[in-house]
Amino acid sequence: MTTYDLIAVGRACIDLNAVEYNRPMEETETFSKYVGGSPANIAIGASKLGLSCGFIGKIPDDQHGRFISNYMSEVGIDTSQMAIDKDGHKAGLAFTEILSPSECSILMYRDDVADLYLEPSEVNEEYIKQAKMLVVSGTGLAQSPSREAVLKSVALARKNNVQVVFELDYRPYTWKNAEEVSVYYSVVAEQSDVVIGTRDEFNMLENVTEGNNDNTVAYLFQHAPELIVIKHGVEGSYAYTKEGETFRGKAYKSNVLKTFGAGDSYAAAFLYALTKGKTIQEALQYGSASAAIVVSKHSSSEAMPTVEQIEALMEEQSN
Ligand SMILES: Nc1ncnc2c1ncn2[C@@H]1O[C@H](COP(=O)(O)OP(=O)(O)OP(=O)(O)O)[C@@H](O)[C@H]1O
Ligand SMILES: O=C(O)C[C@@H](O)[C@H](O)C(=O)CO
Image 1: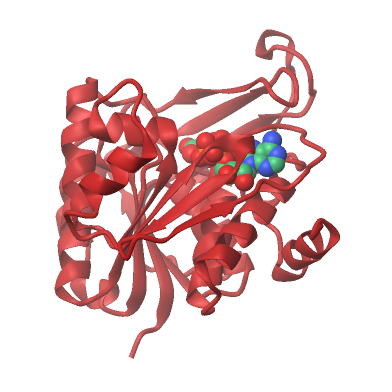
Image 2: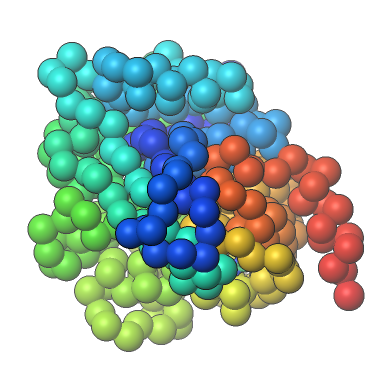
């Protein structure tokens, strides 16, 4: 019996998004606080779409930690496996700059953050067993002991026939060099059932400067993956199956306010659609429509849409 459609493992942090748009961060005075961190955003998005979700992570024993855990519980995520750091480590902070709808950047504060102190002993087999799908975020592999905790969660998922979804989620902070990224990304990608990332993230995985999708899928399909999704921003996304099919998902038109949050909302809705038995082609459209909604809004997590909003956009732009 599975209790959770999806359990995500990795960071749950704080986003501080510029309230004043279209100006550099130097001139931004006001920021709004949201829960952030790619795997947390994916779990929040999936939970808002009605999937039953759990989360494995580590949060600080302070006001930010409680804010994160309260918000995640309020949207329906099981937070029983979010360990509380007792050693004074703090939440990661992401300050966002919205220079223009297409020029956004994130200034991350991630030194010694609580999420990277998740211990393997805090990953529980009985919990993972209860999931249909484990969503692993690449950033959790950046440092020990979180690295070993994530590797353990993947091993336990495989042992218990839980589908492993690897969201590459490459963030340069906290990684030492490109070789290291490629080593750990390859280890996990080769053991995953589904791998999702941008073209640039697959380049990091393969440690190449200009990879191409054909080479990527030829390499990964020699291993466990059955489905690979490669995103190309506004140009849309491609899904490849081990059987040799290719699907293309177009990006939807959007009144873009900022670009971040696209990848997380995409993953949440793509995985929702697959869980509900939609086709891969439909899942690409759900992901793209969800992303188009989130890039038109101020936050990543709070802006995650409902199924009705996604389907309304798909219908509106069906021609
Ligand atoms: N400006 C946009 N307008 C509409 N849809 C977009 C836009 N940017 C991205 N998308 C949609 O979101 C999907 C994922 O975007 P992208 O490839 O930029 O992911 P990402 O880099 O992981 O996102 P993030 O910026 O959150 O890290 C795209 O395939 C596309 O469907
Ligand atoms: O992933 C992060 O740590 C930052 C996110 O929370 C932020 O909302 C974002 O960049 C989403 O893509």
